Image (cartoon, rainbow, N blue to C red):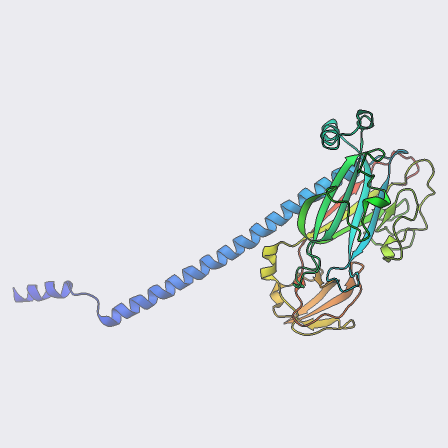
Length: 365
């Protein structure tokens, strides 16, 4: 009887202090592991969600721009002007950042014309022509900001008006009065499309451009062009940038505008949340440095990708430890000195090629 009682008491005995400490330690380790796993999962999910939003936004913008290009007017009333403009982001007296600006005449649907007629109070006869003028422009998001991480970011704007002569205070988008001295369109003539623009690149295939080996901007007959003047009036100012210089191999313009046969669009966006995952320079670099050190090499674009420091684009050649080797002065920019701590920008690039229906028989497509 006593033996049975002792066994019952022993079976009801609780945990010892050593067992309790071990159990608590194991539970803490398990909870820490689960927390770390959830944290990693949430980080991956957040990055995937940001990338998805970037792809959707870039796709939507490229679709809208491509729709304008596909509807270009090839007749005598048509026009197409693409050029590069410089802006002084930091207000130091030197224009260091270039952005593209495109103006065109395109066909419009009856719904588009009716909407513009209501908003502009345009003449019904002008609306009957079925054409509208469209402008696309990238402008600095924050001019003069002290945050050098925000100076490189632009905002994409789009505007449209019914094709025709000036009506009251309204002027043609091809008029010299449409742009201010600083290259900004008239107030109220454009609407914001998207922010966070790091790069909007355009290349235009001419009659002689050879595309089977890829796109290459240059002055040779087989190269593409980075600017365009449909009436060959030297409207892009070549003194501002070499990309505004037109090719010598274009056909002579006669009674119809000369349109590119194909357009290549490159759009690279960077959202505000991306700035939390960007690295900075660990050292000062000058114009000749082809390799330099960064704080976190894991937060760099992959080899072959582009990154933006201040107003200079660089192409990543290799990454070794915290050192990155680059090709300086990419995307038509000039090598420059950059301070220790400068932010390294990059985004996801969306590429779209748009064929242009020119309605001409002398293009070698």
